[in-house]
Length: 171
View (tube, one colour):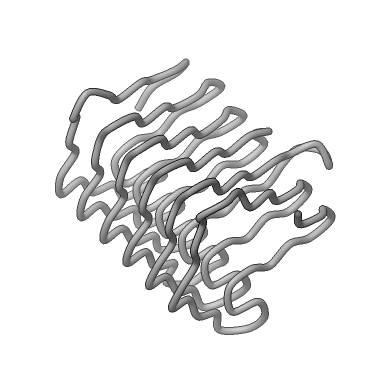
């Protein structure tokens, strides 16, 4: 539970984290989280953000892996509410699941239509949710796919087996 910003880098590993509330491994309020050259493995939140949850901040994953994460609600791996930016570069999100919500791997809800999600040279695989956006759910923002990105084996219970975008553009 962090009020402010957090950086995990240089081979940091978080393994087997559990939370009955938000953010199975990390909860950030009014700040940002940066995960660089690190791993978050086997995490679970009974609420939102199986591995990472930010409130009013940004999420940056670079050359990192989030594997086997589950949320009881939105964002099987990552959930960001009221934030403006989520960047996943050179990273892997694998085996993410939202048990009763949206965004099997990533859930991003911006305060305005100014949010931005970027997936660059990364892989999202084997993600699922019971509602919208088997891999990715974005409300109020743009989605940018950079070169070399791949999304595979995603499933949604309602709409957008891979992507569900509300109020934004995809490029």
